[in-house]
Image 1 (cartoon, helix red, strand yellow):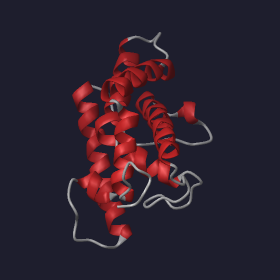
Image 2 (cartoon, rainbow, N blue to C red):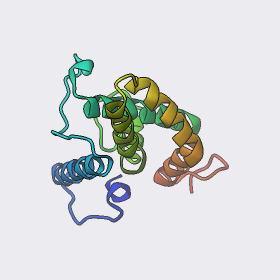
Image 3 (cartoon, rainbow, N blue to C red):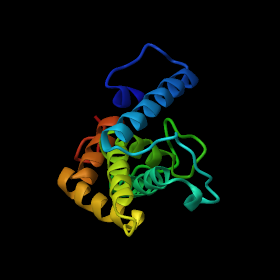
Image 4 (cartoon, one colour):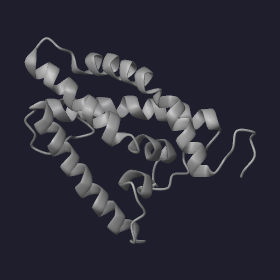
Length: 166
């Protein structure tokens, strides 16, 4: 999973080290996307019990992540994989779904979120969730995201199209 995220296999075997490397990479990604879209960024901060109390970029990230996770749910179900059996996420009933969704954080989730945050900052009448829902639907169709996720899952699980294992 981390090899897909990093674009290469790292020599580290300790999951804690890999999570730390991933955390640093994601923090930088947030910073770069915020700068790219001209969105003020103070870091990833939100309270799960009060999601609307977060600032606009964090709300946008939450919504974008939810939509990408929904696409991953469909892909996981389509291949008959078990959602709780994740590689990186361990303590969730949809751990594998979260693992798959995270593979698209760089190219889909974060850019969608910061683009929508920019729209909402430019127009106070913009509903961030609705904007993200429409933008995500358009982006998912354009990228054929669910079929790509299905192919990635098959690659991860070494499953071929005839239902057998290779």
